[in-house]
Image (cartoon, rainbow, N blue to C red; front, side, top):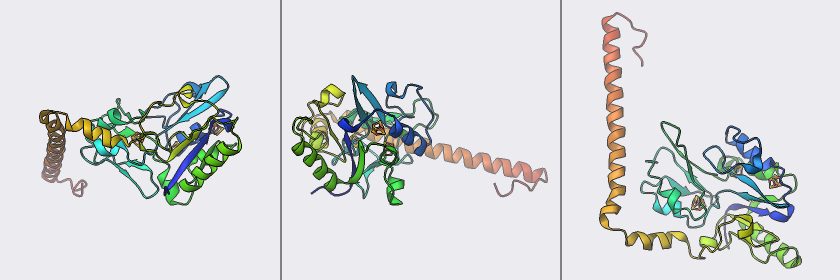
Length: 266
Ligand code: SF4
Ligand code: SF4
Ligand code: SF4
């Protein structure tokens, strides 16, 4: 039994309207990035996409893995799984090493390259909305229920019954149930998933197990890089904090000398 919430995306029901794409942008306060939404790609400003393959459409977003490799490789614990099973990110911990981007089997996390204080961006399964008892914005906006939100247990039941009751309509596999250890986003489709751009040939084993094994083979000098980066991050942060404090003190004393009391409380 798989607890938590998730999404079932059914390719046979998707009409490519882009309502999920637009709703995600609005929910996450993201700018428009492409007039032709079907040609957009995942980026720091686009957390889900709808791609066209002939007369079929395929959604891509974070799969909210059961044992996520983004969580396991992050040296400072910026990623964690929450009570819904969503994998969420804490920008205050992130040191910008981007190991998560390398480790993700679905190539999901994106980086804010253009910002002075860049964050990693990806879908967070609308966790704020879930806490308020709402559906994800993409599921709420979908006019055909191609994107269905609900309890994982129920979604698996629905997917299995659609496959069983319509053997010629569906390719007999639920993508995301076992790939890389499975996750909280499932896809069913009339054709093999690699024909819709989903990452094929993923092992059923959770990727952290594989990344951990690979990391065991990394020389200690490389592993020490993570610790070095963390230390540098904290040192830089501390240095900036001290510099800010010093500036503040200097500013206060200058204003005091000028008899200006207005900035006393800064
Ligand atoms: S799909 Fe990638 S980013 Fe999303 S939870 Fe899995 S490993 Fe992390
Ligand atoms: S769950 Fe929320 S953040 Fe994720 S793709 Fe849907 S609308 Fe976007
Ligand atoms: S809103 Fe629904 S039908 Fe429209 S593109 Fe998204 S998943 Fe497909």
